[in-house]
Image 1 (cartoon, one colour):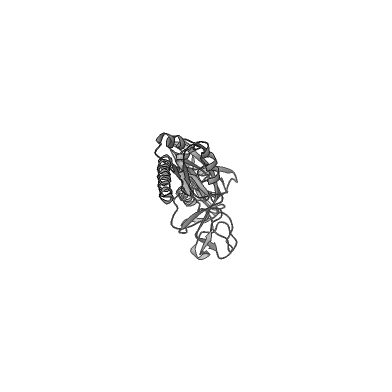
Image 2 (cartoon, one colour):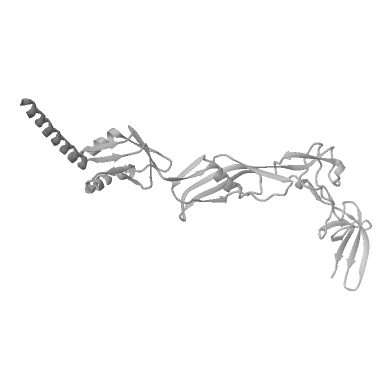
Amino acid sequence: MPKIINFKVFVFCLLISLTRLSWAESKTIVIEIPAQIVVAKQEIKLHDLGKISGENQALVQKLGEIRLGVAPSPGQMRTFTDTYLKFLLKEYLSEVWWELRMPEMVAVQTAYTCITEEELKQVICNKLPQTPSERQIWLEIANLPQKIYLAQDKCEIQVEPLSDLTKLGTVIFRVALVQRGKVSKTLNISGRLRAKGVGYQSLRFLTKGATLQESDFKKVAFELHSGQELLGALPLGYRLAKSMRAGMILSNEQIETIPLIFKNNEVKVLITEELFELKIMAIAQSDGWLNDQIKLLNPVSRRSFWAKVIAPNTVEVSLK
């Protein structure tokens, strides 16, 4: 008889336990949070971290609105431990069964747009001027960040040169990162503009006034320093404006067109008036190019006068 009573008691207790278990399951709140979370808002709430489930939807929504603070800046990270979140949840879940499923620590990042070093460099280099085939230019950038993190959105990279890009040496660019028509970030990027090409190196000492001839030079490849180095074909009808040592590189600053009048040469002088034209000879006191006013010496009277260069070895004095 006692065995029968004990069995009935056992069955009764089992039924009570199952009833309580069923009731507990219906009241349980389950919060599932993964190890890595990306949020899109400036403020983090519990529902941003993961999934909250349970039959009591009012409580689920209330839990989801728990504020966890400000989201990290783009590219940065914020962490939450399971100990901290359990401590926070106890205040709201003291009267219900609940379970928090998460690693010991989770990392939260803000959704971002990343601008890389290569993207910035490409847009900046697109601002370099077009150059002839015999000249190759490149830009060495000194302070380009490897990555820039911005709020997640489309980004336009705008570049404004603050230096003369036709001159070699230090250059500065202003870079603006624009999102939705507004500047999100501004950078001042500095660098060095360099170039190389094939030019002319003198084979011997050349005097001032020497006519340019291929036989006096050899072509060499070199890095440009002033940007004025003469590249391409050796121009005809030019001479040296100053002497050159052997081994020097020929530059545009060192050459000039051959004048129509040479200093100390005898030239023809046309003296014109409305009714007559007179021709005399005189000695040029300087070199002269077309339309230049140069000083001449009359070899007979030894008096000086000025005349306009109009042709090779010919000047004009107009009395009109």
